[in-house]
Structures are given as C-alpha cells and as structure tokens.
Length: 157
Figure (cartoon, rainbow, N blue to C red):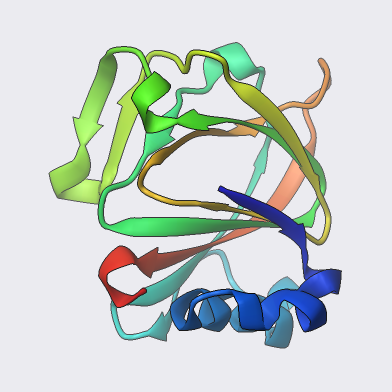
C-alpha cells in the first residue's frame, strides 16, 4: 500500500513503476471535475478510471475487499473518507467472491485494520495483497465524496 498527495508527484513520480506513473499522470493531467461518472479508458483494458460520487457510510456497513488482476489508485477529488487497510493475510472469512465476474472479493473483516483518512488531493494505492475497506465515514457524519479509482492490470507493472 502507498499513500500520498498529488502535490508531491514532481518529487516522487520517478520512484514508481511505469504503469503506476501512467495512472498518476492521468490524475495529474486530466480535469477530473469534468469527467462524467462511470468508466473511462486510459490504456486499452490495461488501465482505466472509474469516477463515482457517493456519501460515505459507517465503517460497520462497508465490507473489506481485495482484487486479483488489478491494483487500485483511489484518489479523492472532493470530500474525505476513511479507508480501512490491512494485509490480505489478515482478512477473515470470505463474505462474497466476485473475482471471476468483477475482480473483487469481499471479506467479513480485517484483523489489525489500520484506518487511513484521505481528503481532497490524496491517493492510496492498493495492490492485490492489500485488503481495503473504502467509502467509510470519518466520524459519525456522512460526507459527499467524488472519487476516481484508477485500475491498473497487475501484469503490466
């Protein structure tokens, strides 16, 4: 897992693999406020972006998840949310397996879960060995969030 801020990309970009750089450059060079909700191709089916707007929910209502074929760059355009994170080895039993259909598997919990708060301009990279619980409220009050999730196929890294 990597957590950062796009403001630091000039100093950090060369440290990342090329495919991850492409995903981060998409976030830097695109007017994300103008992107319609839904899927946007960045590089064939190897890299794409999903734009969503939603209200955060209490952590207890969100399920931890992981992916097998794609990593996530979860970028907050506006609002803030908490994402619970932990190693895939620390997840509890499977709640729902949608790996074949949607490249996502949901779990019932993550042992020793770390809570990370992301606000506007921040991103988190989740690899297939990272479990994560996105879209959680910070505190008790829901927050409206606009988020772009860049999906990068792991075999192109």
